[in-house]
Image (cartoon, rainbow, N blue to C red; front, side, top):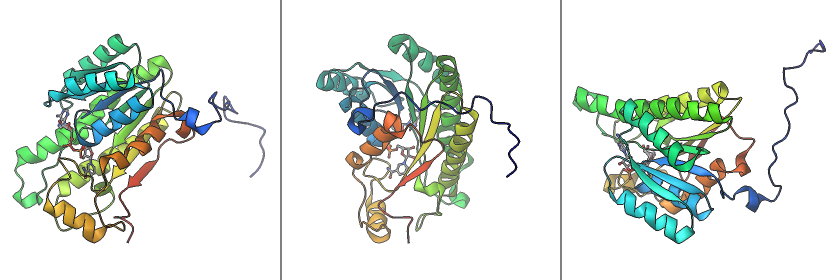
Length: 272
Ligand code: NAD
């Protein structure tokens, strides 16, 4: 390569001012983490992980009112600030309002985990248009609305970290259940997240988590259990406690050089 003497503007960027001790890098003290779908399954496990590491947490929920009690429980157990906020992620006005409310209540947002999602696992020929639109509105529109409104907060703050819960279904065509719409919604958000990592390069990191079968409401049922047993290298579903470390790593300074990555956590399901 010919050396033209020209270098990229602002080059070289400084290294981050983070501790070198990895356990200190993983501490979330003083950080505010928002989790959608935060009252259940993977979302609540993520909220717990953040609270256990000393972070303040805002649980966003749409239907599960136990979010309020769960937030109070986290605050008491871990001596952190926690609150629950109701919002349907498929409604852009509610998303915009709730992000404003969190900023007013907590003063900033360090990490936003766009985790809410749902599946109507059916072949397209058996799916109604309403079922199709419902999955698109929660899994795709919901993530886009959250990113759009929290992205503005990140830009104004000059820092931020978005983590999107996608799925291994973004990478494979699942068997034996045909669910092309769910699979495609997840492929959308994976690529959307990677693209945002570039768009937001001046002020925020963006990473994607792609789980395999986990033992939540969504992952429940004999078919999922059997598939996890039959197809994954580890021969079982994941317990939600086994996903906490990955989200903590991505949320924390331990991953400060990581952006635009899609991290599979599937017990080796996709491997063979
Ligand atoms: P879950 O059903 O326990 O939790 C989903 C959460 O999303 C619930 O809290 C629900 O209330 C919330 N939600 C749904 N629609 C919403 C809306 N319109 N507005 C706001 N919140 C809404 O399932 P989970 O397994 O914890 O799912 C979390 C994420 O993980 C989802 O995005 C899902 O697609 C993804 N995922 C799960 C698995 C698995 O095996 N469990 C595998 C791959 C990906």
